Image (cartoon, rainbow over all chains, first blue to last red; front, side, top):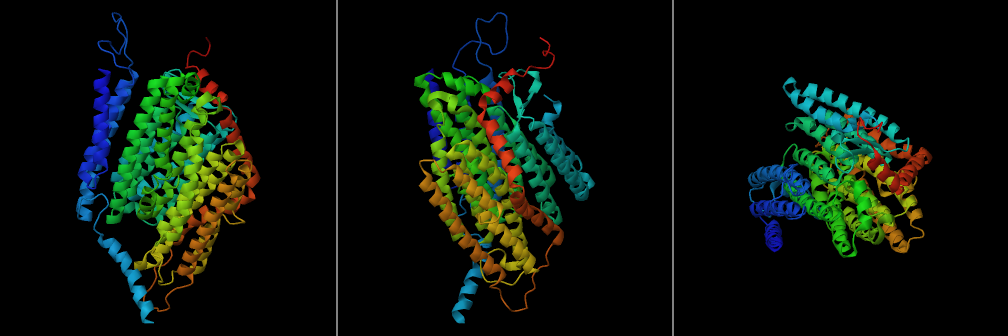
Length: 129
Length: 508
């Protein structure tokens, strides 16, 4: 079981890293989601893998599994969920405002063109004088 | 232990909720309420500062669970100083935001502002690594909202980068915390410091990996090389009061390195002692060199200021990396200086930007701004302070850092990088200053916008910090050395956290 869990985490992390490094926003969102899943399983496994043990107090139990990682995972899931939702909205906003879905906004936006226009204007003025 | 201790965290949380409820009453009500709340927070921070100066860590057990089992809130000298710094900075930034109507550009500015303070204060006071993660997320989520406040293409793009890199950072944080928990079996910083001493030799590599991974996470927050690339964009394109408030955000990363790494991987940690220090010093030196080049290469004033902030953070990293009590003393002196003065520089960049109309803050020949003498003088004072020229506080801070490095094996490298970077920055800032205030267009056809005097008050107040820090250098230095001494006495911190008993068990 250790081997299975470890390889699941490894594959998800690998996919997550690969997708996060893509140049468009949608794969990046997917990549971050993958990374969040990987880290959730990882956190869960950090309480050691045990089968059939309760996490809360039970008089009949022979032993317990560590309840803390479960609480941590729950917190991490909620936070990652909220953050992903925010990121999707932001990616949509960037898509509509930048006119493309490149993470780096590959095409120069109008604002930048406007800013550089002053530079070129003053350059040409200088050459005229 | 006093129940008052937790108030700096609760006040902004309640404040944020109040702000949300006050929304139907209009922006004016929100403004007044927010000003009152932030002023109150300054007062609360002052009382906390007073509480902490008794040299005993104030520990609050949340849910009345004893230390390693429950989450603890710890107030010591360092936390108290950070709280005070945050609230003073927030007051100046809020005043500027209100007087320039920045808060009207979008929804919920005041709510996010309070939530930002909630996250910051929480991060400065928590004694639990996972709780630190949660407060990081709170302050980050608020900062996403504030960063994007007002909208605009470049802001959205910079915001996207900032959000993505911080989400990656959060994931790495969880990996590091998970690994540490898997080996050490605890998340309480004080308890981890004890557990790390008895780590078996075959597990030491794993713990060291987690420690460096945690350093990467804090490095993202503190903008450490090679993870600083988000900072110039994010700080340059957001609104000025938000950029000013964000001057404390990079310091959260530095604070976390001092608190988490400094406590857990202290000299008592056996083979794992100071596993992070060499990295912080090396990366700090590289960051400073690149930040100086960034200042030189910037084509717009706000970008230049962002690189100046990066340079001051890098200087602090070097001071942390030197790793002795004297260097830590210098760190805190320089931290106060760089936070408040860096914020002032962002605000004055905005004043200049607004005054130059369509030319904005691009470093080109443009129309003269309104009241160039006063704005120019303030800019000059800030430039002298931030680049570390005598006689202002930046110079004192740098001298203290260099003085503490005298016996360090890397002294030559530290000295040359700090001095050359200072020279490059002063050249670049001089060029910007002369371009904006002397080399101006003569034609009267374009009218510059009048100076917003009441907003400018915030800049002047922040600027006055620098001469004041020189005049009161002795008491401030004493305070910093007390903070450093308290941090070097890790055993006292561990004892204070772990021996605090829950309510109702004091008599047993």
